[in-house]
Amino acid sequence: MRALGAAELLDVWERGLRQPPARRAVALLEAACPDLRPGEAAALPVGRRDACLLDLRELLLGPDVTIVADCPNCGEQLDSTFRATDIRAEATPVEPTQTIEADAYRIAFRLPASDDLLALSRAPDRADARRMLIDRCILRADRSGAPADVASLPESVIAAVAAGMTAADPQADVELALSCPACAHAWHSAFDVAGFFWQEIHAWAKFTLRSVHTLARAYGWREAEVLALSPTRRQIYLELARQ
Image (cartoon, rainbow, N blue to C red; front, side, top):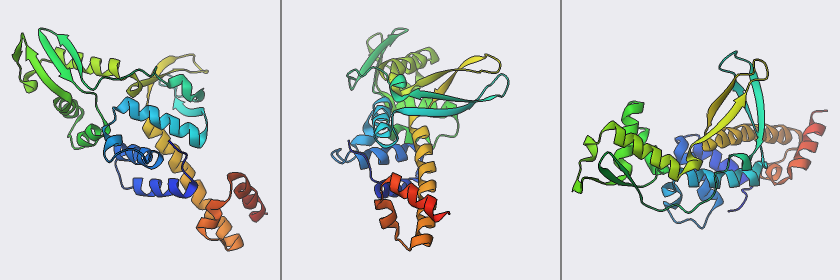
């Protein structure tokens, strides 16, 4: 993995504006990991993908992460800062095929990947999306040794498969423990690594393009010349241009 230059990151961001979230995450990894084979990033289990995105975020933005959340009890807005390492699941080898047994069923499944999330975007509602994901990821279903129809699996078995997916790929299901300083209410909030990272890139891109606009007007520089400056020198020139 390599850090992306400002021009490269802007290119990925611009293309990503017209793409769904799962495709944006894949595009970032493909740009930062040129050794990946075509389709390899999209086929990574979601947790493995997000672990790679955390690595890329540290390269580009550093180890500290700051989020803003609203307390569900009193509505107070709070800032929470933590390290990327605080939300890293333990890196353990993931077998391509996982197996669980529940209610006389034996189910073999694979872990969801970005390709699956892209397919789910066409589902009309959350229930259909969940069922579509199960249908895509279950490789084989047996009941008491005989083949079983995946479409007819009982809810208890589907829930067991979902739990097995989470256990096998914990990085895909990150939750933050938050506490409100105003009312002391404590709760857990899901944290979407890929979505949060993209929001940060979006904010950086808008700021960077405004900086290019300001310096181009002040000095007549082209975009490539502005982006070639180090962030420190670019900021100093911005301060001078605004005097």
